[in-house]
Image (cartoon, rainbow over all chains, first blue to last red):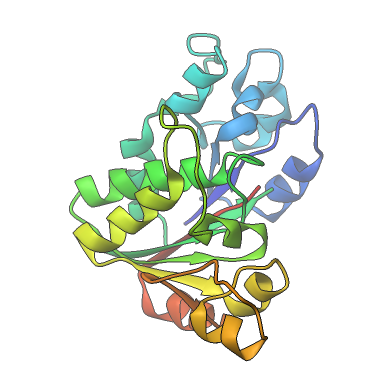
Length: 96
Length: 130
């Protein structure tokens, strides 16, 4: 399993499409920095194909004032959870 | 586990440095070892020894140095990316006839081969890009 890390919002960059296209059936995607905007109820539809494997970093959600506004399909993790995700993955790939 | 971080974003231009530092703190708190932080592209500006941010702001250079002093984390800077941006250690400054230097230990100028070695040698390499 590969952990993909995305720091771009789907409303400002299409790189998320490349990330999704490259993901295997077990891979996970973590939204960080501006990427956490993709966790919003209005944006999460972009990530429907990886339902259950989408995560967002709590610290960046808070920094963007978006904590509590995530779609129900998004699993929110703090930075400790971020490290845990890297432990569980065989490797990580950052998209930017 | 043994971790390494690749930082490609410049301080104040992107969140990469702060994200990487926060991740570094968290992985160390979970009992992992941070072998090295490798600075590449505009990330080399993290090694500028003359950085003097306002006192009420986080001092990124000092934070990296603390990682080295407290956890033995190597701070490696891509030499090709650094030299063309005016980031030279004492040896390179002398070699290029410059009167001052802008990089000092524990930051060390190294080649990309070191990054390849890191990728092969550690358990996890995590990239923080602009």
